[in-house]
Length: 213
Image (cartoon, rainbow, N blue to C red; front, side, top):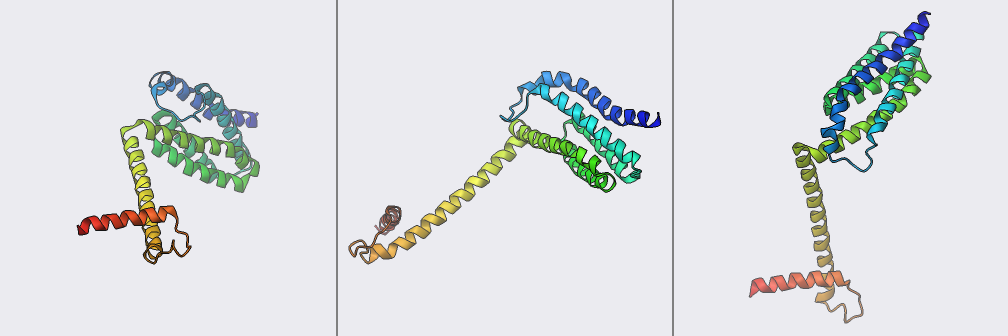
């Protein structure tokens, strides 16, 4: 009887907590959330509820196994902390809470593995789902918030700037390599000069002549 009660509590607490939060944010999902720009790999809205229900049941069963195995206070304290962070993130939609959840969840799985390997393995799908949710949340943030769009634009500008610098350095090196061939009549001697190199050198020569005139 005692084991049945502890099992019911272990599964019931995360499952009921998740259901309450799901009901509380349902109007947001049907409202402003639908207006957000989402990636093509965003799952349909109806999928989140069933997946989270499975995850809550699995984590509750894993915690129960650790409890029965006498895991001690540390793994169960970490478990309670990650569950609190899970509820906080689901309620606040805060990226910081999500990142903290990933860290504490990883520590929880590590401590579970010391007590019950099966319990730790039961938490791995949950870790994968939270990692996916983290990537999805970050993508939505970048594509919809003003700060996120600025960060995305800055990253794009930095990437394009680096590409332009590499292209410029390659063009300079090609021009320098072709100059001796053209200066010594390499083409008349049967040597081959790439068209890109000849064009780059001709462009540089024309620029220099223009400056001299």
